[in-house]
Length: 267
Image: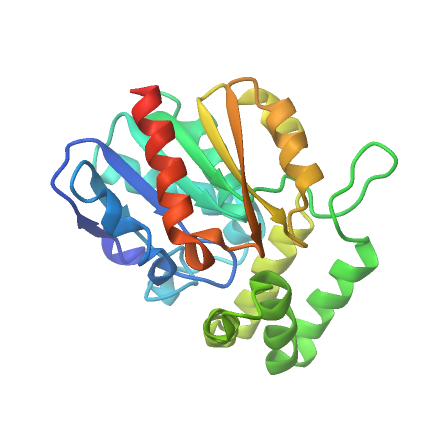
């Protein structure tokens, strides 16, 4: 199997060190268009679509494999192996923060550092010790809505994720992207994402990590960012005074600046 074709891998940039951008649930590599060009001068920029998303090969989709975040992490692992990459910087948005972490745990010899944008290891509250932002009934309701009403769930979730009323095009783009997913794949990816619990895995990762957190994020609240920072022993937490769950789309300049500052400092 040609991994690069399977995952619609796109490589640009003039630099030698690889930086891989991993998109979140219901999205594809196009969502990085306001971020990735800023790194092409200094890095080898690698974009891809998870199997089942974007322009990936849908024939390669395996329901069993992608019922776990480890299945998605394997996509990243196989891309790194196919290109024989080393000293890789992984940039993951939302659930891809945890997917990138699982990939880094699987192939630590290939990964140098990570950037997590609005990460969450557990979206469901586990009170009194952990506030993930949602009750289990909320998540089960969303997953059920995906089965019954695709336009409805896409509109609802896009509003929750975007949360920038002054940028209506952002919610519209997210809604269109959600609607473009094959419904059974969307439902399975949603369950895999929102029912996952990767809190223990945080303790198994020692890669230098930048955590970018929005100060008003319904999907990944500030408390979650603080939790991830406490659990990752080699992490740096930076907060953007912004609303929503997609700062790489709503606040691209601030996001680029934070990533650049961190990478230059680390170097």
